Image (cartoon, rainbow, N blue to C red; front, side):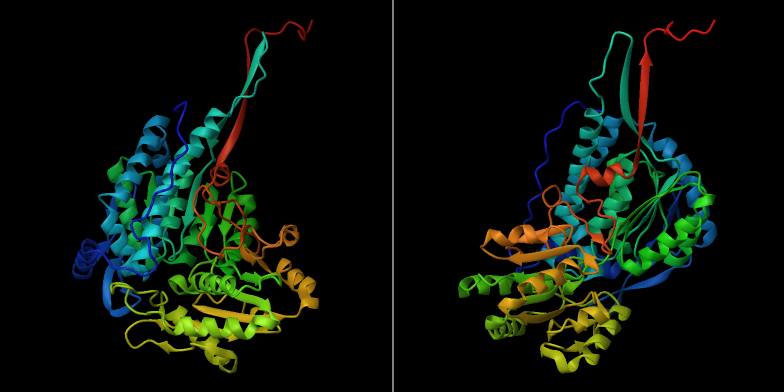
Length: 531
């Protein structure tokens, strides 16, 4: 392991504006993937397998098949688990410095030679505009690898206690978990797929990776990038397929050592129940790491009275609620404002929402595009239709060419929508007002939410700041609820928002390692010799 490494600098994006032009090189890459309709294999023990292929369509142009994804059968998953043992042996024949070089090279490839491919596959497959795709698939992905390199070296270098005597010395070191780690990754962030599939590798584990079907094109691009960077192809078993079948097979294996998951809380609940129910089968107690949903607030406190400040809050709320069609676990779900300014916020939000350009992310100046799938579209449409009397702005749904749910604002003064529906995961924002004598109840309501992921609090009065300690895992004062940066705002929530292991920090890596303590005695002690 290297003895010293500089703290990384975050990768700077080339797209500096929310609205902007799509580079010609990216458009050309999108055209390539449109025309090629690639076949995505399973990769087990480093060998590609093409079987049970299903079409994956573009969310904003549902006539377009973007790839054909192989689907793993139970036997494939069991073989991948068996192969992960060999993958672990191959991975750990490499020196720590060589592993660090691989991830350093991977970060370079993501920002250079693979840049257009990662952008194109993320835009075409997951419906992100150019600005959002770059933040995700380039900047955040490379940041995860660069910072995890730094954290791993930091953990290794800080592992020796000062406890040396003339007779003995104590040391500690990190060793891998006893078994394999299963990575179950979501559609909405390419970088999350790349991080959860590789974070266990930094701690010398092997991984069985099930990507989301909707993100399989960008996620397979990551796999190919890693192999080109020098990662042994056996270190990660790449097994797209049905989530229920995958979960059943991994949780039946005695070698399950960990699960790295991002997705809905209902799915995570089922994983936890299954793992806990099977605990007698396992050789160890599996480390289950999960980042789930969020119902995220923007709260404007009474001291905000300047209209310039209120306009800034409107802009931040639109970005928080509607960027990437609200398909972020950190997306702003509700804006709560003083009653005296409620009408102003509604008017300003409505006016700005009307001017947002919604359409294909391949078009310049696109703000956001379609939701990810027919299921997502149907859920959002049903929600809007059932609550049509509460709609203040937006509310349009159109699936004639893609799964388009247009940004929608609803009133929810008694918090009925959040209690009944919780997270909608679509471009939907509710708004409510409160009177000055309700501020304590309003803060109490936010602090007692089922979810505890992100919250934005807007105030210039520091007297309020310490009243939100139990609110969530990522708390923002005078900023929107989205946009955490690796190494700066390490990310994760508690309560029903996850296990709060903080992606983008050493805390996540530590969940995939065991600490071993070693005592070195320099001579056999005679003090305890038996007669």
